[in-house]
Image 1 (cartoon, rainbow, N blue to C red):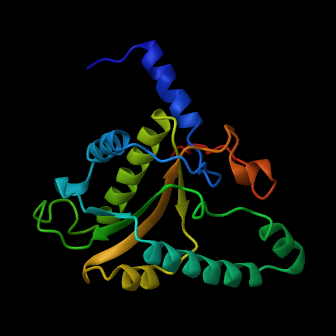
Image 2: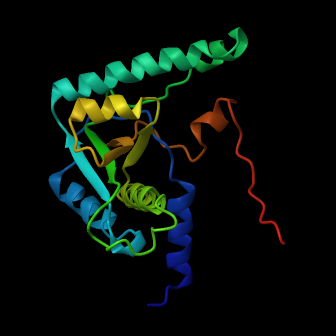
Length: 207
């Protein structure tokens, strides 16, 4: 397969407009779109073709409330760790889309899957978690191509989330994702826009 200039430009637009969305509309996402996203996530690369990611579609109100409570607890602890000036900035940030996003996905990584038969991970077992990260990015880009937004909620304790969802011992928490239609369009990252942390170019060094 060879891609042409227009396809490269389309990919560039998708990459540029991939945002960590926290402001969602409550409109539902159709099952057909969700199925396309599930299929796209399955195209992600993985070490040894182990495909170690496990995804739970969280629809239960009690589980969602549990995640919300854990976020609030961890967010309060994070805010307390800053000095007063930075804390005032921090508490103004919207750091999760838990309340409005119609779809919630809890993603875990199986730490010793039979699939792949250990290929490629004996010296670097962390490649299983890296594989899950690539699957999440694949989902993120596919969602953006559907004009959806996706946001990652990282201000939670992994051990608490694992207990909340009562997952097997070899499932390690990777990400909690909010998915839905963005409330507004903006290609500027939120933290850049509000002055918390501006985008910085990444240089490639030569050795």
